Image (cartoon, rainbow, N blue to C red; front, side, top):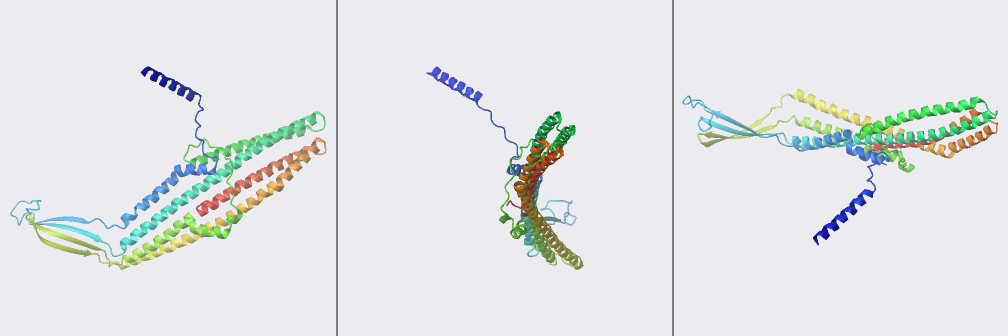
Length: 426
């Protein structure tokens, strides 16, 4: 029975090994880039700039508790009359000197100062979180715009190659007509020149694409030549009703990371000014001192110490400084709000223009260009039009198709800027 069980196990192991040998290999993880979401997910986990801002926000949060805490108490030991009126050699033993004082003291700020310092630290932590959100919004907008530009370059390359194939067919038509004495050799040469120009365009597109991929990999904290998936599609645009300026203005004022950080700076400056006014009042030092004689404590002393705020001119200067810093913070907030709302208006106008341009290219410009080309091709084959007219017609097709793709990419780039200003996706 023992040998039979071992044989069965060996047979099962052989079947498992055979199954693994013929099983399809595991698919390697697909590089990011097919969608915007894949780029954003990778950047959120790996971008060092965003990680640094998050750590700074965490550090600012950890400053809240120490800001409102009391200073550490102090212990002072005084050995009095270490020679006992010259009766003995100097000694540091507390039981053999004339007396020993043990003073424990605690510094206590004026009422409300600790609370103000803690509130300032909390507000500064809020500002640090706002700056971290702003850093992420900037990174996300750059990735979204780069994804749209990569989509444009890939389609530009595709369109150029299709037109290049079309030019190769037109060259054959021109050669056939030239061989039959129906066209000039110049038509053939012109077709070849156009193909050479398009190959040069492909080289420039490839270079632009390589630079853009390196830029995306930089934001993803990957090697510059790391592979990226080709963009599959662009994200859909929001409905026009969701791009209302008044509604977006209100959202920008409430949620823009830069405005949030500036508001936190104003609240911090207000608390700092209030703290500066509290400096008119003294801080205290309380202490208790047991006095040791020989081996026992025979006396107790109490101590109260406070600073005398005599330097009033210095304090007035500090108060004026805090007021000026508050005014500066409010002015920066107003300047930032004007900049944010101006950019919001520009990008809303840009996205509407791109939407209309795409619609016009799709419904009018491209169909008209194709009809013109078909008509020019038929006329050229019948000897009723020259080759220049045919080339101009195919250039119009390329221009119309590129206009359509550029409008799509431009609209997504403008949308990325709007989402950056809002600090959230639409």
